[in-house]
Length: 283
Image 1 (spheres, rainbow, N blue to C red):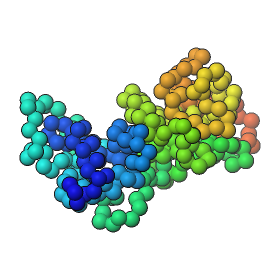
Image 2: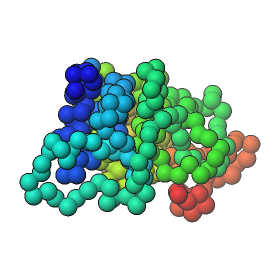
Image 3: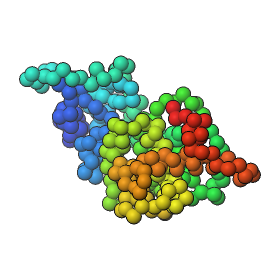
Image 4: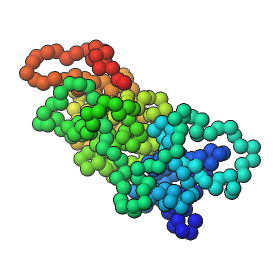
């Protein structure tokens, strides 16, 4: 491992200790940062990606993908790691489409790698308001391609929404808050809620912040998003509000706000939120 260097050796060690008993480990760079290096300020995703690339080029790991999750097989696992009474659990059994791949960022070039793709925003089919009508994160929707076949948002794309809508205006978390902590919260949310619902709630949280008192009454609570300030995912996870969980309030705010984007040239009354959801089902 001397040829790999200290950082690659450290990442390699993190893969060993998290692998299943067959030597397969989750290795998404964002996940590794959040789970293994969340308190290491000098080890971020831009450092983890070259380390994984180096391990792959040295033949230490091979990459696999199942659904949207990235895994790696430790090549020398059977030779060096003899597991006494190994469990039957294997990551590859969780995905029918489990297959070997080479990630786009895992080339031979050592050039800097763009960490996250442009975030995708789930939205209704109603028009956008004018920029002058909005403020803060809600006025900067994340870009999405016209192709509607993109499928379920990935973890990286959801983190892109967090940066675009909650970490305004510069895409960085508030002082004293680590992006990796939002990554951990996001993983917990995805255990109970669909990814497309989480995407809607993220933008809805920005709307609750940027339009105080319009879509929900503010709650006297340290985690409630304040106008003009950066926000994080704690309100969606801790769920303290007067009547409904904040996650539900954020989703309602998103759809109510989307329903009001039809323009000001008509006096059409707002559509009931239930009717709107039936007209624009979340897929």
